[in-house]
Length: 242
Image (cartoon, rainbow, N blue to C red; front, side):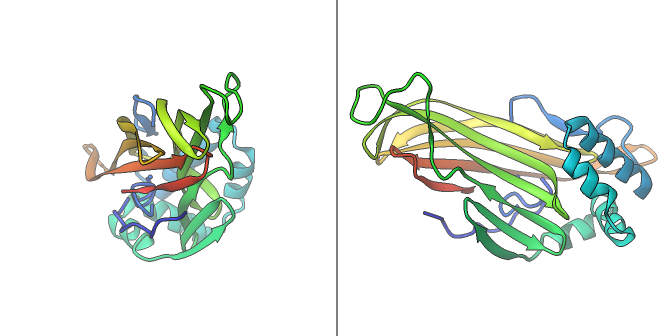
């Protein structure tokens, strides 16, 4: 079942725009780290180039249809710390099936979890020895429906009935990061079985900066633990930041 919304930690769009409301594998995922853009037009060009490189044609189309006001707001988010802070200071929450969305204007962040866990291809059914499942959950940040950042925790475990019995492994992945002069890194924190539930935790660190004549200077560094917990039957019990 869903846990109460965690307190916010500003900016992967605050850490996914707010690490917990906000924010994988070992290597950093940096968006436009080299020659960071210093003007609104350069920021927008960098974002579009990254969207094109990611192969997200629908996001590219959505970006091209942004109004002048939306373009200004998006560029300001990356150039002005005050705008970034205000964008994630408050939000409205809604649940859409497996997805929970929190929004403040065009800025949105939230999490997605599958309705059912996936049984491993080499696994066997319930009631048989060595049955195994794979579960996952993601956290994301977007603007006007354009997915800017997404991180994912995945895990595999053996189970019996509704109880998880043995952790087989877990991974942390940066699915996408197209934020200019924003670096996202992740590392495994812990993976374990407790109370019949499997839990995987990943530490996510987000560093943001501001372009200056001397290069990009960091103005914020945030970190949080992205946690995924599930029962042996695949039911997700926790997919949030802590």
